Image (tube, rainbow, N blue to C red):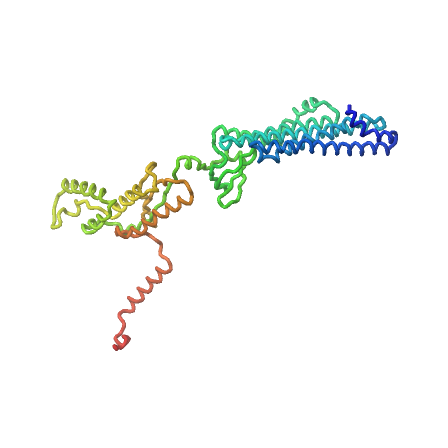
Length: 435
């Protein structure tokens, strides 16, 4: 039953009872009273709640709180209409049943939306915690909202057709196959979300790389159906959650946690420039301070070998066939290793090596493999560039050349030299006259 105050507001509508005009007037009056009650409820509730929320950590989520209170306030007009249609006997019974069913359906829908807002608010509160980035609950919140709206839809249909919800539930068994087909993606996404979280495969803020889906950037959102990745070009790629289980992807989180990033780049050396160092060249390289420990160790090794395998001697000492001599390529490798160990921005942990790869028609790749002391992209590129700037500049001091495919300038210079050689010396008449 309606409160006495509301019944007093509706008393003038009793004058229209018994006519079609009266029925319409009653409905219009109920709608006006319901609208005023809705406005008054929001006025009395929303603003005080907003002031309270501003004093809590959820002040940035005031919109979610306002939506929750608004949906709860929307129950008030539905209750007024639900109870008000029973006050006037002039309304047809069929109209009363229809209006009450619509009002009850509206109440169920409003409560469902309020519960959905409450779940969103719980997710917002959880995201304020430090562990939220590693174990988000947004997927579970979306599952909860799906269940709430599914139950609300079932109740609304039951109210509108005037049947018990249990009857509708009994009929769902026959439609289970259809429901499985309709919610196939949701079920797959739910299973994938559980696996991703239980195995800690991905977190918000992780840098992941998935070339087959054009994803290369930071994870900004993990939802039930999709994972959003903001690429480095500021575009956003949405990856189906199930794809992260069925297909491979690279997660760079552990690289950031380790604190260093790998450098793996090769210098293509012209193989024809590799050779033995003469005594003068060896002594010239002794000017490099970081090479002196290597050179002392190498000299002792070579002297021991040559003393053991002396064999036949010539005027320069040991015969060239039996004698071991240092090479410019091996000395350059030792220089690179010593330079990397002395570099302040190269990590002293992790693998550090300089190795030769298989020779190809494009030279002998001399690969540098080490780790920097930072994971910042800009700093990493600057360190890598600084290292190879130095190596490219110091390379000729070891009598080595960098392999590079000939370009147009190289071909033009070669043709000019051939033309000059074929032309021979210029005739004496073509020489300029002496002053």
